[in-house]
Image (cartoon, rainbow, N blue to C red; front, side):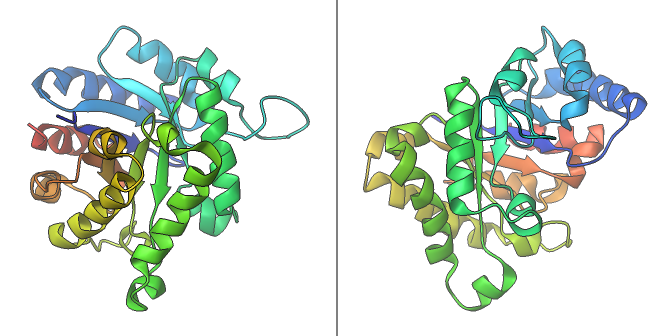
Length: 250
């Protein structure tokens, strides 16, 4: 049985004081989370603070990105080796904001995915369609293309050592949410696609929903057969909201 994972993506938010308060709140309530694994993905500059605060706890942490190179003249980038040094367990790759705003291609995402695994990080591979792509009825084709870019370079076995996050781009930060049935449909498609290549990988890999999950809808979403948790944006910045999503997995 797949253990649910609820991972917070803080994006470019936070300060030393606010993060200390947020983590204190999460740690205070984490004991009420019986089933889900909890993780937070912080801005890179705050990872040392997060690592110190969460050391010895059941809460994992990770980065929001990782460069595909291990070292060198890449100003402003963060390598997998650097992230590992601060105890990161996860690294988000291919988030829609990285793809859309910063122009990361499917090939870029695949390279970053592989770099994360070279340094024993678990990639959280984000896939999902734009509003116009959903309206054109090509959601499955878009998500399949994004997955294929990684599978063709890293292999299906590498997917088994990752987490997938389906994030309908039209439902991120807009207040819109895919219905549980809409989300389940894409999650099931992803798992079926993987099963054609390796049934064991498909059965074991966790697929998260990443489109405006909140305490009020988390239980119904996570209750779907192929939805194994959430990649949480705005709600992860409020301890009570984030914990409400985590406890919904109980």
